[in-house]
Amino acid sequence: MLPTLTPHHVYPRTLRTPPTRSACTIRLRQPPPRGPASLPVPHPTRSFWIDTPGANPLADAGSTGALTQEADVCVIGSGITGVGVAYHLAQMLGGGDQVRSGLKVVIVEARDFCSGATGRNGGHLTPYVFKGFRRLASEHGPAGARRVLAFEDYTATSIVDIIKTHRLESEVDLVKGGHITLLATDEQEANTRADYEEARASGVDLTGVEMIDKETMRKTYGAAYPGVWGPGHNLWPLKFVTHAYKLAQAHIDLTLHTRTPVTSVTASPRGSRRAWTLHTPRGPITCAHVVHATNAYASHLLPRFAGPGGIVPTRGQVTALRPNARLEELGTPSWDGNEGFEYWFPRPLHGSDAPDGREDAHPLVILGGGREASAMFEYYETDDSTLHPDVGRALKGFLHSAFPGKFADGRQPEMEWTGIMGHTQNKDPFVGPVTDTKTEDGTTFRQYIAAGYTGHGMPRAFACSREHDRSRGTR
Image (cartoon, rainbow, N blue to C red; front, side, top):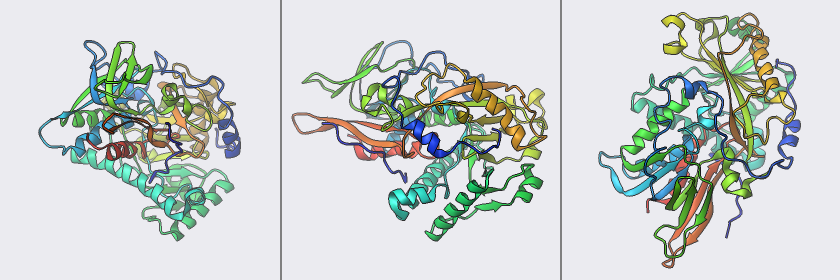
């Protein structure tokens, strides 16, 4: 029997007036025009993170040759959630020097390794410190709101700790630059201050948070708006996930099969050694437990997640462009503005980001957003092989409007791509078991899900993937 599942409360263009959140919510609640999500489409747009030469050494791993026939755990999806499941299993088994051959894990991916949202996002690792506190408190109570914020801090801190423990800072381009939110309207500023005061009164640790007045912002960054500063990092997400996979593979029997889409999951015939069968064009894989780390595409295999009450595929668009200003003029923080619809940061200057090897060159700025230029906010879109022209135009004009003189109006980006996020109505992901089956001796074998991060997966997904391992155990 399928249990009732609700979103898990995780501990956990200009700068004109943005569209109201109510308008966005109305679009989100409309019924899906095409039923469950499709599989990821072939030939997606070229992402800076994925398609920079040498960035994805695992791109086609396991796509040819023999297909693994059975495993203890099958993970569908090779983004930060799917690889996180394998990483945390390895840690639970001791993370020692010896491979624990008793547990066999297989990750299957429809396209190239990490080619979904994790490999196509904006590169931010920014937990909310107090943002949305009043909404969270109204839904979960003050203590629940604090747990959500603490969970995000824990997730981001865990990722940074792994990077530092293994001395991967330069490998993954980790930058501790902080994060600034531009407050373009009086209403945004008032709401931000109200969230701040209520979080402070509730006991949230606001160390390092600073309100920036309009004049200070203008003198320091060149923007004519007030803002708020908080902790934050940016990084190359795909490279972190690649290293996490290799760390997991060193300690458990872990296999990756890319370009192997799962078309259905069924219960294995009675008497089979494994409870579940994954069906792929290359053949079946049987396993005891299944983890759906498919985010926006979850409803393709689990139709109950189709529609506004489940996980709504939502297309995001991202550009990589050069400013007129140098890095020392821009600073190193990441940013968001326009009620979070736009988000950006300047990349560190080295390698391919520094033309002709000059460290004083203009940095590459990664800018995402523009969904408000689409009538449907890009909801129910699973096609990341195309760009939305109106969204692209909105992005091209945004930074020029926010930082006059530092960005050229309408400058063409060096790269532009799309990716598919998974949105939920209350912004919380679904985390937990979705179905199970029992053998004659009473042993329970389950399918799990962790998906629906609403464009805020980096400070949530990695720790959400750990919840499966804790509930499943290492049997």
